[in-house]
Image (cartoon, rainbow over all chains, first blue to last red; front, side, top):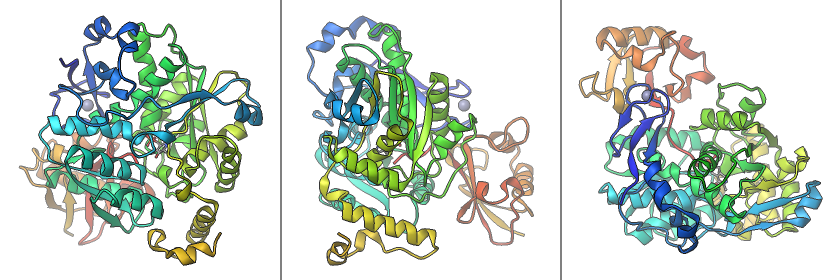
Amino acid sequence: MSYMIGLKCRECGRVYPKEVVFVCEYCFGSVEVDYDYDAIKRVLTKAALASRPKSLWRYRELLPIDGEPTVGFFSGFTPFFRSERLAEALGVRELYIKDDSVSHPTLSFKDRVVSIALTRAKELGFDTVACASTGNLANSVAALSAWAGLKRYIFIPADLEMGKIVGSLIYDPTLVAVEGTYDEVNRLCAEIGAKYPWAFVNINIRPYYAEGSKTYGYEIAEQMGWKAPQHIVVPAAGGSLVTKIGKALKELKCLGLISEARTKLYVAQASGCAPIATAIKDRSDIVKPVKPNTIAKSLAIGNPADGYYATKAVLESGGWAESATDDEIIEAMKLLAHDRAGRDPARRVHRALHHRQRAQDPGAHHGPAGEGRADQADAGRIRAESRASAQRRRGQTPHLRGLTPLEEERTWL
Amino acid sequence: MAVKVRIPTPLQRITNGQGEVACEGKTVSDLLTDLERRYPGIRERICDETGKLRRFVNVFVNEEDIRFLQGDQTPLKDGDDVSIIPAIAGGA
Ligand SMILES: Cc1ncc(COP(=O)(O)O)c(C=O)c1O
Ligand SMILES: [Zn+2]
């Protein structure tokens, strides 16, 4: 039973069949999945949910597939817990962490979007999937497509952290390392995408893929006892996650599963790549692209696809944004090392933000959405990356990070 | 003054299925005018009612997004490559 009606342009309202369409043919606006919410309301009750397995597929009616899920049975439903020590350090009364650093199978929230994208790709008849990635998405597509028996092509900037590269290579994809920034990799993929019969998860089947981020929002509400928090701080790169968390809470309100959805949304970015945070702070609906320069590589998207929608979602919610310097991110990593939520620089960004903002309101919620494998973001590596950023700032060509020999790496420890 | 223009899939119906066309123009703005002359109807798909590039369209001249150059006044020279790309693509 499918509750997915079709696709609809967010800008001009034109409708499209639920096939491989990712932008409105007329205005290039984003197309979104449209559901039969009346039908969903009849079946998706708290009682029904309580009896379902603890994975993201428990919200299946609100996800864009026609048949049964085929990928990611163990993804989602990550821990949600109160963090007293961090709350104290930040001067916040009540603080929770939604910890996707233990996401199955690749330790970032990307397993959510990829589970949905690959299930849908199979339904649409694809036998090959692909993506452009800053690292976490690459790992998730590599792992889950191996599981799903799909062929895989993964495009990354050549200077990714070694841990991220190994995390993908272990699943034997065709890994294409492109000399350039993520934005350049993404442009390449957007241009070649149409030439190959592949499901590019974040390009041609993006409307389905992006819906996966909603499960992060559903879970927060359910794990809070069917309540929406007062504030949610979200790290942003492309801007999709924060946008979809906002959408998820609105959907739960419309289905009667929560009584209020007045959560204020906050975006955290690295100062070296803060196009969305800048637009929010300028209260502008124009997101100016930037050239990223930060150690938070998972967030290094200078030209965010959903920047406009993220800015809108945050400002309409009454929220705000902040950016953190690389030094602040490293400080926040140390602070977090005393907490239990992992050490991906991407996640340190919003920790640093929170630290700086010292949100006065209670009920703040933190969304560390990335993985915390200690081997990937140890202090030595961070220092080495800082050096690479500094070199880049000085106009020197940094090492191909992924190819730095381990011995040399050690000298930085 | 031939410039190669890469056309995104949603607009290829207007260019008779061609993914790449040759056009002329001293600036990106001129180029769009020439594109419209050759393929009537294409301009309104790329630009809004006020003539500005649509929010969800990115234009590149060779390696660079024109927002880092001079926008639609970015100069063009013989042999340049121009790409028109939907902005809604990608995400980590
Ligand atoms: C760990 C982590 N957190 C947050 C994000 C931000 O998500 P989005 O690109 O949807 O803004 C990403 C990836 O982009 C990520 O890898
Ligand atoms: Zn439209």
